[in-house]
Each structure stands twice: as structure tokens, then as C-alpha cells.
Image (cartoon, rainbow over all chains, first blue to last red; front, side):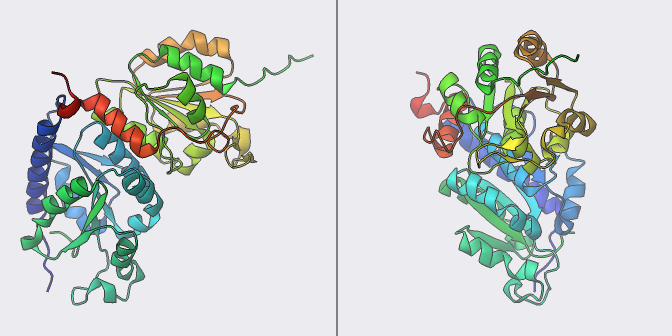
Length: 186
Length: 202
């Protein structure tokens, strides 16, 4: 059965992910950006990840930009990437559906690594998301499969290693990669 | 007898003025500003928003946040901005001091056949930008006024919004195809900003 993941664990994992990303960039380029923060979260508020978003409000090391739409978040991520900044998008499945053309244009055609954490709002704890009675939950993984976007599910605290792994995967493939947040974070 | 209204500015002339004044700014053209900008400012620090209409302002915001040491100029269209109008609030909320958002207002979707945008020329984008929280917003209707005010607008603390009353561009992305792909432009601009070691300085 899936378990809820504590916000603090996700935030610590994000910090490690950003540190690793900055170190990797510093090895690649002569002029990496110099900032006091570790990285960026672009969010369109997601009920499933609300405890993480609330905890991020108190974080100095991670900068958060709340966006009006997921289209904006994806395009802002492109600008941050061009400038050398590590970035993670936190959205919900409805936002993925709403912004799929921007994901295609920016992350696929533009080959910009964009890493998404997507909350599966209304996912039933005792069901595989593909068998959910809610279409928003049920169609999420098939949509990602249709677009060839690699994805994995965070089903509990032991799965947070997937965050840096899929972040790296987005860089290696130069495109989108997704982890799906299976239950509300705690 | 009232005076005749001034004819709208030619977008190409506006872009030439901006190109001459931009210094080391990163520029983000889109739609009908893109073909002319390719000619006027080839090989500079630019990336065209192409393939995700409406994204120029957000792409510019990301660049401005990543590179606070450089100014970012967005060369947006009215139809494009309407597709992501919420970006006005997102930009105002993020408050990048180094962002100047130019809006080329012609009242139509020129690229797709000049269909009128919702509301046409009556839409007041300056009012919207200021209400969203941009630090400064103004409309400019003639080239002489733009020439006079441009240095001050570029020096002002952002985000700054400038609505430019223009006519139709000579070319659109449909009549002047070609130029580097979005992918190529991204790679080129990233290399210029970050200096990859393989191509970096010795």
C-alpha cells in the first residue's frame, strides 16, 4: 500500500538534488551562475503537495515562484535552464493536461530538461492509478506514455531516491521526466 | 478640426531602435517580431519563443531570474500575451528588476491571417500590467517618442511594461520561414551565457 511522504524528506531530497545539479554544471561550464540559493521550485499550487509548498515558504535555500499556469511554469523553467539554474516544477495532473502543448514545444522539441513532480489528486490508496475511477488520475500515466515521457511513482518514503534519479534522467535525455506523487504529502 | 491620428509605428523601425539601445541585454522575440529581429540583430543574445505561442513573457522571466546581472527584453505580441495573460501577475509577483516587457500591439493575429484579437485595439495592456503590479507601464505611439524615452525605460527598475502601437510587420513566421530552430537557439544562448569548457576560454 502506498504511504504518505513527509514534506521535510522531500525538501531535503530536493536540496541534495540541486547541490548535485550545481556541481555537475560547474564541471561542465566555465561560468556557472553564482547565487546564494540552491535552486528553484516553480509551482502551480497542488493539493497533493501542499505540505511541501507550505514548508518551502520558510526555506531560504530554495526559491519558489508561484505561477498562474503550468504553461508559464514550463516556459520559465526553460529560461532558468538556459541561464544555468536548477529547477523543479511542482504541479498536479490537471495542470499536466492543461500544459501538454508547452511540454511538447519546450521540453521535447526544444530538448530542454524539465523535471516535474506531479500530484495525483484523488488517487485511491488501494488502486493502481490506471484503474482509478477518476479520469484525471487514470489518464495521467497513459498520457505520459503517449508522449514518451519517462515517469515513476513516489509511493512512499523509500521512493524519494527517484527524485534525483529522474532529475538526472531529464538532463541525460534532454527532455521531460516526471515523478508522480502517489499520496498527499504529510 | 481634429488632428489626423498618427500612423502606427513600423515594427521594423521599433526593433532597430531597441537593437541599437539594448547593450548586452538578452532578447526574447516571438511571432511577428521574430523574422525582423533575425535580420536586425543576428547572432546576438537572443532566443525566439517559437512552438509554444504565448510563452515569450514567461521564457523572459526565467532568463531574468537566472541572470540578474543582465537585462532581459521581451518582444511580445498582443495576441501572444493574451494566450498567457496570467504571466503579467506571475512576472509582477516575481518582480525581476531586470525585465522590460515590450508589447507590439497591432490588434490582430498577423501570422495566422490577421484575424482580430479579442477586444481588438481597445484592450488596454498597460492598465493590466500596472494593475498586476509592474513597477512601470506606458504606451508609446510614435517613433520619436520611443527614441526619446527608450534610454530611461531601459534604465528603470523593472518589471517595466511598454505597449508599442505598431502596424503590421513586413514578414511573419509564415512568410519568412527558416532561421535556427528553437533547439539550436537554446544551445547557442546557453553556450554564450555559460561558456562550456569544451569551447571555453583557454
